[in-house]
Length: 319
Length: 252
Image (tube, rainbow over all chains, first blue to last red; front, side, top):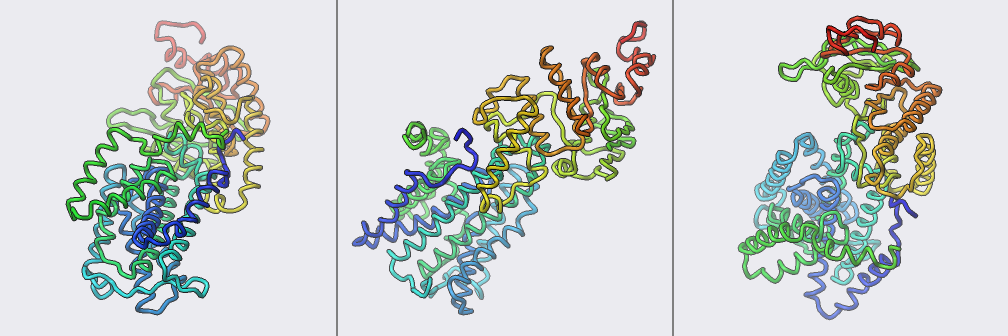
């Protein structure tokens, strides 16, 4: 097939990768700490993929992404704890509320470049402020406790190795969704938009509508990730959903490689591991991140995916 | 089919298009000519919606589109090409043409999730048909940037035709083409005409304009100075002056 359009997701490479990832809980069965780390990576990989879609492929500088992560987490927490909703319903509601937040934000897509980026950043700050200040709902800076483990198909998912499969299913579903989106007329229009916006508009592509669609889809993803995080940890607090997390997810995308889906996942893994290793630094770990971000943008603008690009192009399954 | 009513465009102090009235009939081939800087391309930018008019109205098939965004004008049946072909050089030829379907079928999330096999078939068929129509036989998977200038022009036109336009605006379609390519262009415009498509073209190649167009509109300094058949326009003293200067007397 000479046409990249509508490429298939299922290849020997993707099946092998999925099989290896599915075996992770077995390999880490005796190491709860590593299992917990892997689960956290999975949640952040969901976020990184979502940001990759809107920022990498859409070229939209969404700097308040963690705010939508928080909308999902708090929605899910409040609905299950205070209103007795089952997990599945709360999970869907978490996505819906995050999308609702994005609808509120959507008028700003008419802003350009830096103005748009600033507006998203401020939107994220406002959400963080709400999580801190609206104590009646969020319990403020103290954090929200006692979020129940989810029940899926009648089974309570309590053990980390079981939770892993829940996260894995969500991540895989998200990956396939984004993959299909990118290899559809929508994805073609996205790439066209990046190359020549004038030609796109005079070809009948509604650029504004596409940008809003990307914001909404990526927010739904952030909402889903937030819900899964809340029920995994049983506890959420505002800093997790603040600007520092937005920057961390941005770094995952840049480090992994802009416009690479596997890159976003690898980026999430590397950043989370570094976060764990530098946690002794506390707030100062931001300095490490800042320097790393600058160095990466200067010396490896294509990210880790750029390093492997040459190899992957020569790989047998691409022939 | 396409009408402008006292359409003007001012850039700060400069009047690029000055109260231009156009009335183009369905199925007509209309030529827009005039010296450099006469406001021809600005007029196209106003009609296609890339510029906002300073004053005046634009109607397409009776509908007022003055305040309609460019993509919605495409959906309403308007297509245009550019002097320098506006393509997506890093996209495949297939993708370049496929983008043009947005006018009739906006890319949606739904298409990405369901019915992809049928969609692929339909899209492939219409892309192949359109490329055959513009006589571009190339590898669908090749990058558009690898095409020659003349091929890029045809590719751009193929993308425009994917939107199923009722009116196409061609900005200097013959510029940069050799004799053989111009002949192919003339045939293609003739085929569009036979299909009932209204064609408006800006062109400096007078022989081409005179031979191809039903009527010709002449712009100078943003104003319409003449309009009529080739013979009428050729004999118009204002046109002769605009093209050749005051002292000249010979035909165009």
